[in-house]
Image (cartoon, rainbow, N blue to C red; front, top):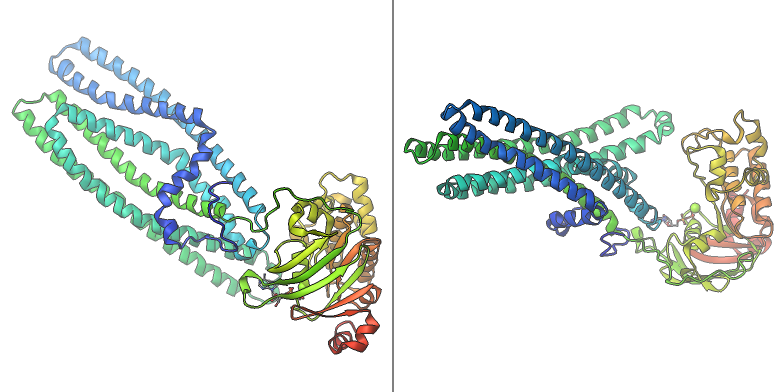
Length: 601
Ligand SMILES: Nc1ncnc2c1ncn2[C@@H]1O[C@H](COP(=O)(O)OP(=O)(O)O)[C@@H](O)[C@H]1O
Ligand SMILES: [Mg+2]
């Protein structure tokens, strides 16, 4: 997408502690917006022209004032006074129209750019590899999508155009000032750097404070998200007060950081105003002397004072905007950091098709894997095995043995550190990701449901599925009677994360989802508890329906599943330590005997 320069697997720079990132920030944040701005070139040019119109109108008011004082009031000519008033009305009309154009064009562009950034950001996020989300915090990501884009929108819509207008007025005013009295250029040349230098210094500190404040806001939303989504746990353990205190602390930290930012902003504005008015005082003092010596007229001095005030307010406004721009740049940096993370699960340039997709054989050769977060401890070690099409495999082993990890590798959430995984003879890295994942049906141990209707939850992997197809899938998953007994049937909402359903019901929804997709390789992570014996029998029946004629790997905890399997793989500490039937393993493997005794009863 954008700024894809360096791959940084499993490292997100969400909080941006990098020095390098910080130093190039101003430059890179401009670069960040350019591709988005390009689409609105015409409107941006229009906005620029309206800004010129507005600043031109404001600047010409000063000239008009000088004319009025010298020729109208000074010479006592009422006709000139009439003209001056008409002229003022005309300028006001131009000013009003220019302001209208500026506001509408700038807002349109700002809002559109921010919407585009949001879309691009989300699209980038969903395409990142699965493992990336282990190191990222959801609250942080939400804050990127919401808070940071809001900051950008505010700055892009109002602050930025005011900044440009102020800058134009500043420059135009200074030019007119210098033209009126060349002597002043020297004074101005000394005054301006004295004002600008401290502003730049302080704006830098302000930027750092803004970054910290934004990070703290992220922490608050992470804390809120985690607590709010675990309310049952919090209530069950009576942790309301502790959670509250923890949240209070986060809010306090965030408040302190925000107050520091606001404090710096205040100091910055105050300093700027002080410096600017001192500068103008000096300029006025010199101008006044010239008037007394008759070198300039009263009209010149009026225009002079007008421009001085214009320049003073423009500079003051610019200083305030410096803070806003810094915040937007900070937001842009954080978003750009996400765009810099790239997926490490890449597709071959010309992905191969899967031969015989309805009969899937799986072959692992010397597969080893360590999670990036624990590179020193291999989660899987030198696993070799072949699974024939239609074969039913039970994976058995103590908790933490690496069973789920094997599923992660088959689904290509991660690539193996060593060895290869082949489907029907083709290395999984050479298959298209969509091809691979379409061939696989996953029923996870804890099914994930969306806060949508039952219909939408079952049709999750097949959004175009017909009502009849979804109904049949529900029937095969043994969940149809339950759904049909609900007042709203398939349109019933399941609550957030399916909170209104029991464990067994969620499991069967997850099974229906897979049946609907009709994959030919099944990965089932059997639920350990969550189910009473009635649900268990229903889920069991649903699974048996599902596995019929398909290659399947089941992480098995129940004796019935294990006995039904064609072959059992015993995994311990990431190694495949034995394979065979239930009876073979009972006689050959002491670990299996122990598991059989204590785990599957
Ligand atoms: N995302 C992860 N990062 C680091 N280590 C992990 C991660 N997921 C699992 N592990 C570790 O890998 C090992 C195998 O885990 P897993 O495959 O989930 O075991 P199980 O056989 O119970 O399904 C465990 O030691 C676990 O702590
Ligand atoms: Mg597991």
